Image (tube, rainbow, N blue to C red; front, side, top):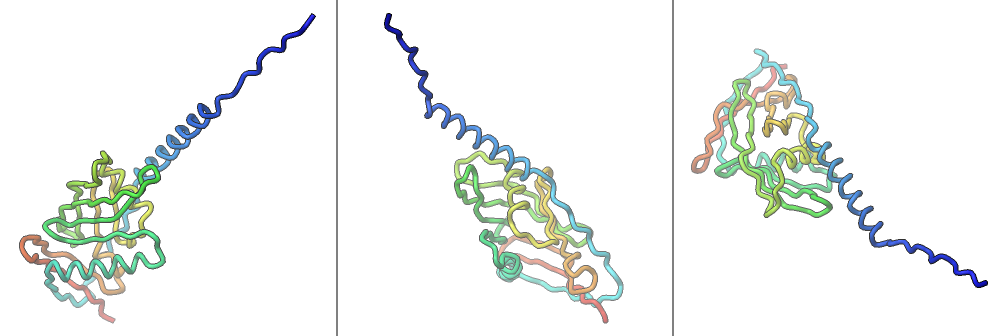
Length: 199
């Protein structure tokens, strides 16, 4: 009597490969999302002491952009990522981020407000990342976690704000600044108070 062996079940490698790829993409997306939306620590604003010499400095947009380029380039030394902060009719941050492994250029438009402390708060108003529907809070969180920002810059992804703690730059011991006026119309007028500590 002749025995017939049962046919061996063949594995569908394409099916399992596709499922593995989907699983990796899901885990990566969730991990990046959780990391991006975690709050960043806000630095404490340095107290204004009376032991300073205060000088008002008035700048236009061109001068503010040159100053921003200096500080950003200084913070980007030995860093692979690049971004720019500029003022036009808005304040804006431009750069690139990775979405599912692909580099995506973005422009984040912000509205500046002078706070009573002399610091500046930037409220996100519009995000341009081509045709991708990426939330503002996601991109801000990604910037906060992956871009080298000065320690006096704090992001609140829930409120979609960036606070420039200008008064904390010198930590009360070195040159610091306080904003007094921001006018983005025309050539722009930005009035800052330079606070020079007395020795």
